[in-house]
Image (cartoon, rainbow, N blue to C red):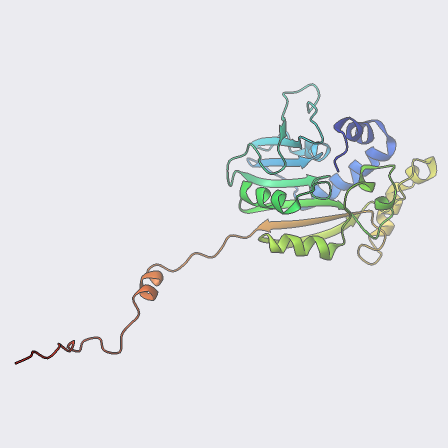
Amino acid sequence: MHLDVQDMRAFYYRSALGRAAQRAVRGQLQAYWPEAKGQTVVGYGFAAPLLRPYLQEARRVIALMPAPQGVMAWPPGQANVSVLCDEALWPIDTGAIDKLVMLHGIEMTTAPDALLAEAYRALGPGGSIVFVVPNRAGLWSRSDATPFGFGRPYTVGQLEGQLRYHGFVIEHHAAVLYQPPSAKRFWLKTGRAWEGFGRSMPFGLAGGVLMVEAVKQVPAPRRPGLGERVKKPLSVLEGLGVPEPSRST
């Protein structure tokens, strides 16, 4: 199921908890992608909050928002880069994306295979993609007070297995959002401390969100001429005369 774009905007831009979540996820994304100079950076789902650091240096930034969710103009006060799209039919040329991030994308769709196939098509060879999904073992997936409490949560093994099946090579994974999904003042004030403490714990034990970075794998090219040699195998009788039928007398 998709949440409405207005609910997403209210959480990430009008609530202290949403701004804390935005800060933690965006910080990890920037650790993966410290720069994107001259590249095409695309977000899918409700990834607009993560794209702002790339607006100035990237060649192009696009925020794709699925039709069941709805679309909002973004960024405010600047030329709009948001586009409403079908989940599995993006207005993007094949191989045009250098960097792609999904936030509230794959866990919300009812057709994850079609969505991943479209992401693979639009991503350029060797292009990088980051998935941000609720952690099945974390507290955030168990609370409907945030968007991470909706849709299908994942374990890192489930997500990485699905990505490999669709031709992606896993590069890195991390867990973020160790603070409880509570709007109480104490938890919000200590949020940064929880993030630091959580990184020292066993991976994924308490982090509310998983982030997996992968790259598009392109099949290895065939060596020139190999196909022809296979199509025309050597014959053990090659070079010998071909017997002719006897003539009747």
